[in-house]
Length: 96
Length: 486
Image (tube, rainbow over all chains, first blue to last red; front, top):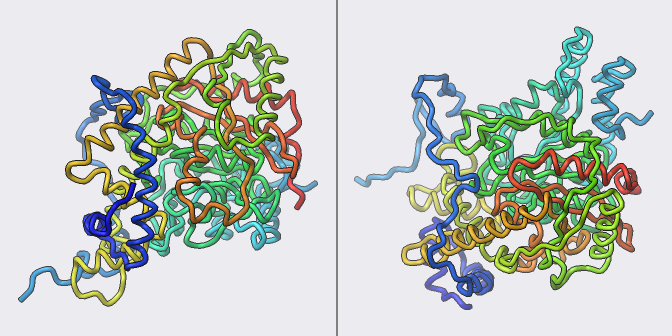
């Protein structure tokens, strides 16, 4: 299976990854190989078979909604590439 | 006495009798690490000063007589688990400087049990790989042969145990990442039932498959570590509410009349090396000699397991890894004035090629119009794989198979060929898809003297049964006693 340059670029855009021309080429080939291998799943009859998300079939693990401790704000912000006055700082989003 | 070579069981006895101190033991292990680390490359970060402080505290506890189960035992931890105040990289540049503000639940449990954390071990970036060659920092070499891989993704943990650079280690297993390196390094590795061990503070790769597990020098030590790690955690809603049985009770019981299933489909596998099938055939004879009854069973959907896995794992990874955006923690590409561009530059420079490959595969499989054809289809095949196992467990208490189709391969051999690397996971990843426990134990050596592992898989929460069988096998053989020529 071959996936086109345009498809690689579209998926990379969705995943917020920049790929250079060589990477687009290489990824296209390698991902195509993996997807080609995955295609054999189509040989399996799955009509009426429910999909599995949790292998122990645990659902709705409820607990009481009680206030508990939380992480210290300064400690959390200390890992941020840029922070100021209790906030995360990012490059400007709104122009003008 | 070479203290670093002790098992946890032996060290516990000596510490309790006060024949050695936790400080002496930790010093000996640290000296061993300094002697070998340059050759093996098992660690990303060493925790020398905090380890010594923990050892001194353990000695105080031992002197007081109130001795927690792992008091003074030097343990290495895969760098995928958050350690408060200690850098946690996940083998990635994107987390190179990340200092977690909290402990993973398993780290908290280790600390409460008195363990000494000696360092954070090397791994494939975000646990994606079978060799540690995808680590952003280094490749861990196999202590049995430095030209070969240690296995992955918990290769640093397995190599550290095999080379006596710790007494036991913690890894994580999403498709075989505890069992395969354990097999390649000749140590014992357990992937517990999904939900047995809390995932809180385990950096997420594929949330429906990830599970934390111990790597040790012998079966007894492994059971002891899982005893400490296991149990429900309110902070992980996917963790199982079932209580943890006393695993030590299971050790020592015999195997008389226990039916062990040998999956027919695993015998006819392409690419399986002769030394591996011979060692496994011998292991079947050993089990029968111990009174077990080996029966043939069928897991008909085995040929589709790798394909289903390589849809589900990358899909979940692409979603989990969306959080690395250069805003809250970790690396940010410098000097980019536009938010969208900053995200893209950060992720492209921060993630290595294998992680980017899996994010792209996962994003493709989850993108509009493809969800039903890929993720849903793979999740349905997953149901069929689970039904195969359930049916097999009506005929037997556990399944026996190889761990990997070959012994440790040479460094560099598969690094440029992702699909071939993926196919080497064929025996292990089904257990993750089904959420069942699997253990790898040493069962032989290849012609070149490389360790070969035997896998036993059980039904959900059957860890005690696996330990029982593994312990019987270990008592009847001497493979686990052989040490690498270091």
